Image 1 (cartoon, protein in one colour):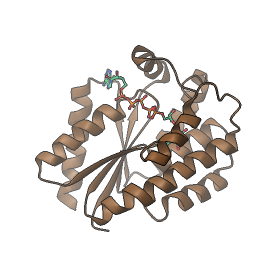
Image 2 (cartoon, rainbow, N blue to C red):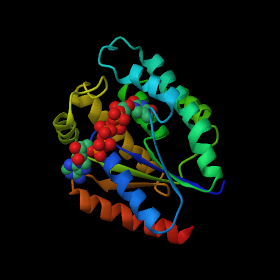
Image 3 (cartoon, helix red, strand yellow):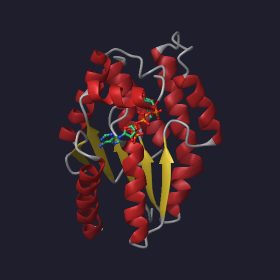
Image 4 (tube, rainbow, N blue to C red):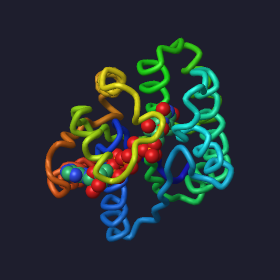
Length: 208
Ligand code: T5A
């Protein structure tokens, strides 16, 4: 494929959306074709799946049903948006991708890693991130940021221990795939985080 997929990962409120926007500005200024995407909810069908997943009224959602809904959202997203954008040569900046499923559904919910890996592969259908940023932040700080913006969704309402497991899982993913994943200290100012990401992007672009 001509394009490239860059994913932004981390716990809630770590600043992914903010940094995707700033990375888009940087890459567009370099004359590159960029597409911005997010999971869950990056398509019309996915938006309906997202509503089911994040509605605090759905406390009874079974962990396996949750896993399958994230996989369904991703399968639709890859088929409808990500693969076509990559084939057109775009750099796709995606706010969460399959590392989130590994972190939340394996480490957070305790689902079987092999099952999650199989579903991740099925949903991504051969698409893999070329570069991933994990924005690392202590959960207490992340939840405080989210609460400042509005009410907590179904997953944000999980206890701090859940978010700590998810945070550690992202750091484990980074340790296991250092050639793909860069950890960024997300407790810094927006500008300092953006500068770290810009440096890593410039290095990556120079090697393409
Ligand atoms: N999920 C997702 C799974 O369980 N499995 C999966 O496979 C997938 C794909 C998605 C939920 O689904 C789960 C994970 C999530 O729980 P979402 O609503 O899309 O939910 O939520 P998030 O992805 O967590 O996005 P948020 O919008 O909550 O957080 P962001 O995008 O990380 O942060 P951002 O940029 O919106 O910033 C949050 C606030 O912090 C401020 C911003 O101004 C904003 O107010 N901020 C900073 N403040 C201080 N310093 C900085 N450096 C800051 N950067 C941003």
